Image 1: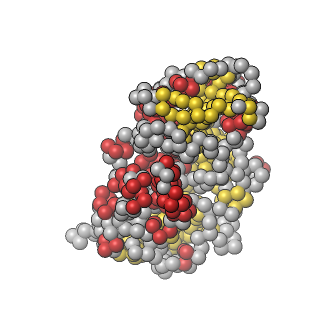
Image 2: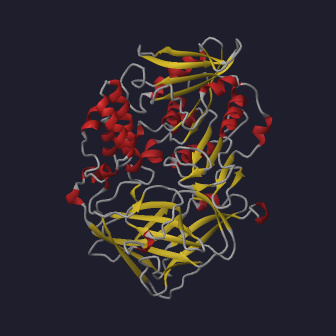
Image 3: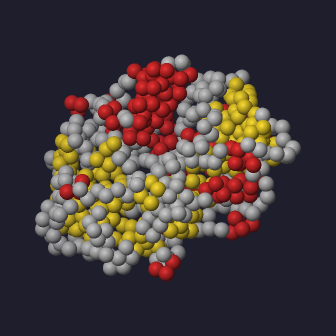
Length: 571
C-alpha cells in the first residue's frame, strides 16, 4: 500500500533455517532502486518500530532506505518460542541475509535500534552475516552480565523487574489473557512493592507463567557459563563491523555501551572499519533536552536522526571523507551543557585516561578533622594531602532491612539523604579553579566489616554553593567478613561509573560511603557469599558494621581524570 509517500508492505515473511516464520513490515522509498536496507529486530510489536526514540521508518524510507522492522522469534506475529538474547545470533544472521535478498535491495544491510534492538545487532554481528555492512546499537551491551544486568556486580533489580513484566505482558496478549496483560501494565509502571520482596527470585505467578527467564537472571549473580553464552564481544572482535554506539549518561546500560566501544577501539581502526561513540544527557527513554526534570539546553538532543543518516550513507551508499577525519568520540558535558569531542574514549579509570593528551589525575585523600564522618555535617574531608598525623577510623551500620536509597543515575540532589548517619561523607574544600572531569573515578579505600561479607557503595556528588549535592558517579565492592584473629584491613579498589562534568570554581566534591543503593541494584543481605544472594529471604537480612580507615601511611584515595585542554573561553 502507498503510505505517506512510501510503499508499505506489511507482514512480510522471513523463513529461518529451522522453518520458523518471522514477520516484518517493509517500507520502500520511491523508485525501483537498488536501495540499501536498514533492519531493526525487536520484541515489542513491529508497528512500534522503536519510535519512542527513533524517527518512524517512513522518515528513513523517504531518505532512500528500504526499512525492515521484524518481530523476533516468539514475539509479535512471529512464530516460535521467545528465548531472550540467545536466539538472536542465528536468527539475526538469517534475517540479515533475507533482508539483503529483498527485491530492490542493493545487498548492503545496516541494523539500528536501541536496548534489546541494540543487543540483537551485536548478536547478529557475532555471527558475521556477509551482507551486514554497519550497525548503530544504542544503549545496550554485547556482554550482558557486565554491561547490562550486573554492571556493579549486583543485579539491577530496579530496571529488570519492571522489564520482565513488560515482556510478560506481551506474552499474555499472545495467549489471549487480557486480564493478566492489564495487570502487567500496572505492575511494570508501579513495581515498588515487588522490589522489596525476598528472595529476589521469589516466584510470582505472572512471571512463572509468562516470563520465567527472569528467574534465570536472578539465579546467576556471578559471571558463569550462563553469562558466557550471552557475551558476544569475543566473536565481534574476530571480524568487527563498523558501529555507531549511542549511550546516555543516565542510562542504566551505559557500562555496556562503553565496554563494547572501548574493546573495538583497542582493536584498531581503518578506513574500512571504524567506530563512533556519542553519549548524551539521556535516560533510556527519551533522548531529548530534558531528563529527570533537568533542562540541558536546545542542543542536548545531539541531532541523532541526522547522525544515523550520515553513518549509514557512509557505509551503505557512498563514503564521506569528512566523517573519516572527524574525532570519533562526541559527549555531552554536564554543568557547561556543552558537546565535546575526543580522538579516543577517556572514560576508563584514571590510569588509562591519564595518557590522553592534556589529561591529569587529581587525587583527594579521605581524612578526618576529629569528628565522626557520619552525616553531611560530620568531620570527613577530601584533601590534596593527608590532614592527619595519625590514623583515624570512621564507622557506619548498614541494616539490610532499611537499605539506603538510590534509584537512578540522574544528577538529583542527595543533600537531605546525606544527613543520615548510616553513611560516611567526605567533602572537599571549595575548588580553587573550574575543572573538567571526564572518566571513571578510582577509589582506594581501606575498611573492614563486622557481620560481613557486605557491600560498600561509593557515591560521588558535586556540592554547589547553595548546598545542593548532585549525583555524579557510583561504584560498589564487597567487604569481606572481618576475622577475629587479625587486625588486617581489606584494601578495596573501586572503579566507579564514568561521567563528564564541569566542576565549577567554588563548588565542592563529596564522597558518600554506605551499604546499598536500592533499588538501583539489589541489596546485600549481609553475612553470606554472593553466590547465595538470590536465595536470601527476609530472615537473612542482617546488620553489618563497616569501619573505614584514614591513615596517612596507608591512605584511602579518590582519583579523578581532569581534562586540561578545555579552556575557559571554550565553555
